[in-house]
Image (cartoon, rainbow, N blue to C red):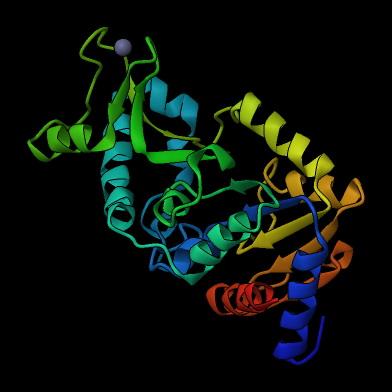
Length: 258
Ligand code: ZN
């Protein structure tokens, strides 16, 4: 959709003012504005490592794969650990302050929405989080930093203290089932929202991208703010291809000014 940025921002602000139940859906573009490289972009982690090496089945069946997986994981965690939320994350928190937010469904695993002050109970991390690690056998949870300490002191592949089971960060790997309860919750919100705001997702990863699809399919308005085009642009009421922080930040300033 073309138009002067001010006009698009005015239109977006109006959509937020008129909405009663807002669902926010966020992807990697949110995190890149906080300096976290997109795995799939040039220079991203998938240029150095082959993602097909890290299919869930391979991780659980091969010790050598687990060793490389943890190497890769240490690198990605280092990029996320100290990242700070940007203006777009703060603007999402301001949407919550309007009292209209149903939930933030995020594809991101960096917990930046929590760091920006969004209520943890409103955040649905459909691809999990890097900040915890679980035993795949007994379910025991570990803080990521505790496992990080073991890895830094020479452990190549950490195992569970209680049952010696395989440990894995609480992120969803290729070939690993999505958490059913979280997806169900996300779809339920998509079906009852009257405005779905997509931020920084190219909407090509499924089943995640089915969330905004369900929203617009159930009659909600759809706003997409993303650097590039998406396959759902033709269903959207407003598309803005511009910086997220600047765009949503300006939009919320307008909303807050009334
Ligand atoms: Zn265990």
